[in-house]
Image (cartoon, rainbow, N blue to C red; front, side, top):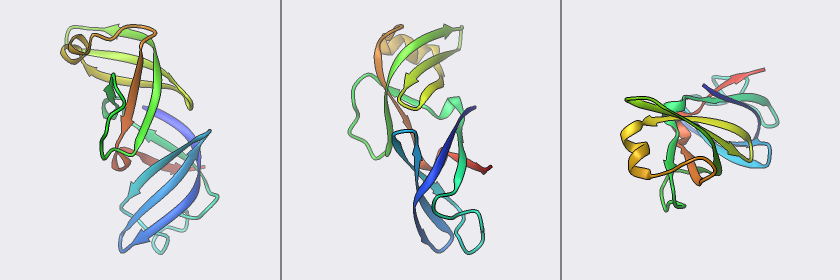
Length: 132
């Protein structure tokens, strides 16, 4: 599980949904929640939170994508642990180390190796939050 501390710096709610702007170090993340400030007293501006996402939710690309995914980080590959079916890739980003797990088939098709630059993408609805 990838886990980083952030701060809610923007909050837009409509009905049962909220779109949060969360500052993690120098990067602004977008997080989509099925919750709102009326039902959760913790959804407030300037609130410190923990942002988490599974390693399997990290999408990798060799080129900067033109996509609807809003959370995109430029990264350098620090390590690749290749196994028969899945491979774990450790990435160095502006917010720290991120782990991604992709199929070894995808790893080989991407022809990436240690020290290569890639883009890591995380969908706003795949990020979970917890409160300090």
